[in-house]
Figure 1 (spheres, rainbow, N blue to C red):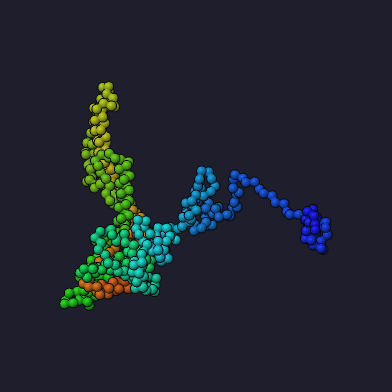
Figure 2 (cartoon, rainbow, N blue to C red):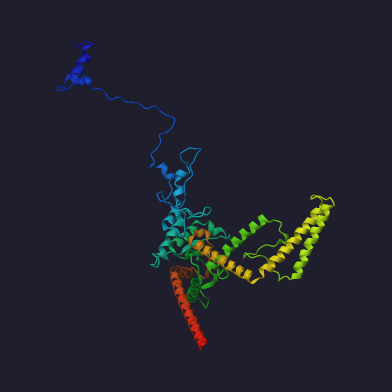
Length: 453
């Protein structure tokens, strides 16, 4: 009915709105689209974009803790490297005790919130059997003593380990020690004997992070003695043996101070060896930082004789030089070596005389006291701030006759409020200091009265 030219026109006419004028329909067009050309460089991002946070410094950074400015990656590029985008630069390092949340994360093999919580070479991830044992240990601990301490419970494992380093490769032992550090509780472990039934209890007091634990060790040994008497069979105590492996080491602060001073002396000895590898006499400072044992005071005649020997050796070298010898000749080399040895002898005699004066002795004592104070301060800092895997263990070991006695003793050791003993000990020390000061004041007043009379 319509021709090939009239059909499109009819369709356009029926699609128009009856109210719109023809001119309006003809003037309506689609908006123009402009496509930008692709450039070789990416568009610069705003200052507050996510990438710019990597280069901020100060408190506006995420977890700002003095980490400083992150170095840019690439060769002159403004983009970050893959390592910088892992957010590792923002994580804080562990200072002191970990959180229970981080311990739970370590037990699952997840990433902890703080860095340094776990030891790289030691395993912490628990399998199903270890997790069940760990959950039982946590249930035994309960909610602690109500003062933020305790609640670690005690752990039970069956082992045939003979290697001393084997406990450090046991994930259950590592995780529970970390948990006891977070809970401020002693680490109590029951090693069950499969053959004879004589279980051994291991108590580690390093998780308490105290400077003095003598009162705690004495109380735990006394508690073991009491339980051994109650569980005695046929006159034989239920606790066969109780060993304090920290008795020879002393208090934690003293042992850590000796360790710090040993490190300092090793560093000093290495520096001396690097600076003077062929020092005459082979004298080296000892572990306390002092020099070799001081010889008795030298007399003026010995010093004069040593000085004359130096002049004699110098005259021999000068005579060889005047005769036409050079520094490469063997005779000259031997003479110079003798001259240096005699000069070192004179210097040692002069140093001994100078060190024998009262002023030098007082200065040496003062330097020794200052070094000891610095070592004690560093020891306190390490006890409070180092991760638990970097602190030395402080073990108490108990051997029980049977398993019921071992469980009873382990429960008593884990539930004992040991931190309260430190408070009582500090109170008694303060009272003793107060009484000592009062006695000193009374004696001073008596002396003053006697002088006035």
